Image (cartoon, rainbow, N blue to C red; front, side):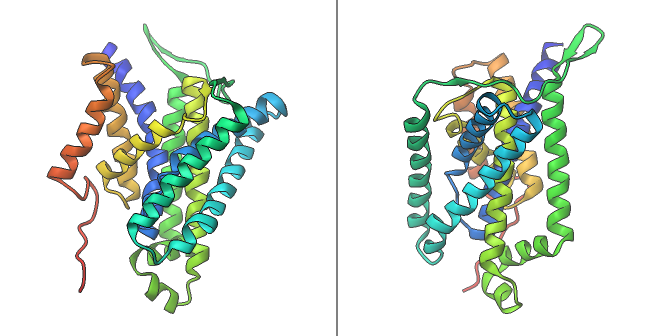
Length: 291
């Protein structure tokens, strides 16, 4: 019974990682860059939810929409201001910029809200599901359900809409896509917008599970989501889902049966093993460089 409970906790946690990993994998797929500021967009979304609910007294659904709009706008602004000028720069320059944007968002939150973690009322209040003597958290079920639905929608969007197909084309070859009449800049902005909106949803689900937000709330989930993206195959949407779920289960079971202190080390150990054994990830495609 305890194993089943930990498995469900792992699925819920993994669902949050999967949503964050989706933002990583979409941006990497289209720009071939690692947006390490993505985890901090979650933190911004969580603060926006807190302000909308506690200060402005908006209903939960409207508060979630406000959080998504703010994060989507922030994602587009970050792309336009920080990353667009570096399209032709070296990967190292882009990586350093991404880390700089991450610290900028953390420091801004620190100045605006202080270092104390803020308790936040959950926007999702679902009663637990009772099956005999076994109880399943309603929030865990909602988290898993929302993640699956969003993954299905994103997969359908990418494969069946003109914008989605433009994203696929730009991810394959920017130059050829531009020659075919695709607006590369707009397509990249749409990708950042979608990824950042999903980060806001992840922030809402994170608050539902843990009930607090601070300036560094998004740092560790963001890094673990990157591990999940690499595990599943960065650049693959189904890989992000698979990697997030697996990582959540590994972390939950590690805390329950090995050590709470060692759980993070085990998670990052998984990254090392994957890079050594299967560098492209579980569902990642092996690409050949043309010279």
